[in-house]
Image (cartoon, rainbow, N blue to C red):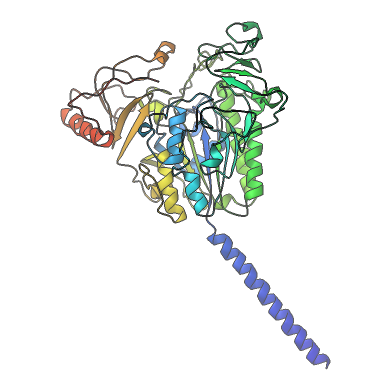
Length: 519
């Protein structure tokens, strides 16, 4: 009898062990089959030469460099535009921003730019079972144009594909200076309602232009309206005191939100759009980063952003999901020094070249306006390499669609997944870039810029936007800094580029390119 009982127990134990083994194998198989998490880390006004991995010698950015040396560092990676809103529009929709006439730098009260019926990257991923979230800068409009900030603001990120959103409405230098969670202002006291106006001030409210004694950061141009935390802003705001952000805490604040999202959503595939605010103005580093760069606030906030990214990467590792997470790192446009405040960005620049040898910068049709740091990183899946393939942020839509197994995409996005994963050095054949109303063509090693009339006010503060009444043609492989205009000496290539540009843009050169209305 004892022998029979022992045999039964042995069989039961064996069956139980086999069952546990099978369950464990199923879990491992399920985990290995799980679609990768996707994180887009997007900086604001970071230049091609602002990182040590892209040649900077005066700034050291070890955490971003770790992505570059551990992934694919693109030397020909582009934003779609030389300004923020159009680039963000293209990234999320996979469409050229110049197809939408409203895709320009928006005020904080602008209506939602993306149609709720439009295809977006988060919408596409939701259909594939992804959780979706945005943390950080939005700047794509909210509501319908008439916004009551004291009620839920809709439509917004949550209506174009994001399950969760924790954002600032526009930019750090624009009102309203509050955080918005899933459409609701965070920390709002309904007894102190928010009022926002971009045309006229509210009676009795101080402004930077009339009350310079109240300003800690002196404005240079355009930032002389309402004062928040000692900083003049664009636009007028009244009320909402308990909801106003603390500028110096913003980077830490967004980091914690991004980390918390990862920790609470790690069990299923997620898409996180982590849109950081640095190094956009006002540059307000936390006190622990002040003076660290020796270049003033602009350099300090770049170091701050690098540290934040390092901490975020630690979270992915600690939560055990680093090996199943594709990370895309880039910037919405090129660099700018004086963008509205006296903050020593020009005076303390020293030997640092934010443009990395390129010409132009933010707002410019020249290369430094749209060619930006661009890195893809996937530990264990992407072999480190440097790629010269021409790729654009707009291509994330079609490429990620391929990655997750769907053919849903959009008009202008190109599938360059093999380039993103390092399996090919083939990128785009052609790319139309945009800057403050102007468009130009990158094709192969060449860049063509049509003739444009008119002036841009930013030229008065030393920004070369590229408004010239004559055509320009550059061989970027031989002339990265765009010093030699070959339009007159290489007529065959000029004719070829114009024909391609005309086809892509639908322009009629026989009638002439119309004068651009600059934004």
